[in-house]
Image (cartoon, helix red, strand yellow):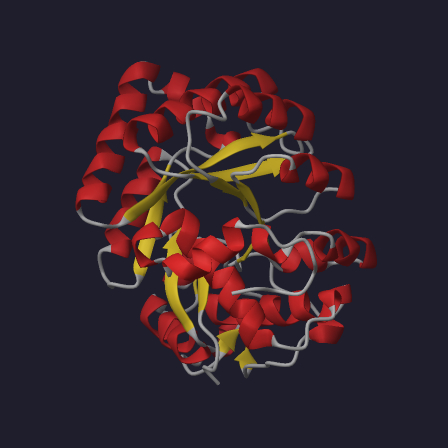
Length: 324
């Protein structure tokens, strides 16, 4: 199947489902190796493991060290920002994140600060004021380490964009991943030259969602699964464009040669690519994948850029047809 190259920019390998645990019950053995084998066969050649807390970031780094094609982020998710204050010493907690990020940079594994941002859909986990305070604080991590930002924005576009605008000179670039907001919010993000938008199955549930995705220039887009969440379901509008299918079984009948039903995984980023191509009317999926791959390298793996292609993209291209 692997005729294209893809990078999945968001995989939650620290989630219990990849340890075989569902709702507190052990259903099968940990299977990241089998999951990755499917991903590599599908054309994925790099995966970014997301960190959403200090402890999770430590685990993400440990996982990233198990394979040369795995990388990770270090940061605190907006819904978990109370951990700064619950630690008893917010500055010490911040310094621990900074130390971890520097350690991961030295190992060639940490490629972004995050997942950080604002989530006003889940204020029951963390109040808006605390989210805003520690979102802004994490730009210091980016500024100090020179790493790009891996960002989260949910129902908070106005405050999010205000904070990004205030800190736009303190980070090189960033991606707002798992984008599910409106066309208006999309356009706000696109006013920032150094912000990209990441899409996954949750970005493709409805026709309105697909219209929003269609309006994201391919030069400002990245693709992801956000595994084990955000799969493209049969009820989603985007399913009509999906061509690649893998055999699947329920977790109770686990087979390492099959996808677990209801658990997303990195190989399925191929389906995200297919939906992007379908809703944009792009026939050359190889060309599209090259552009998206290039975007991702430009932000997270700049040493791997093809300089000529980068110059072409930097020159601007406003049509929906991809460039490389």
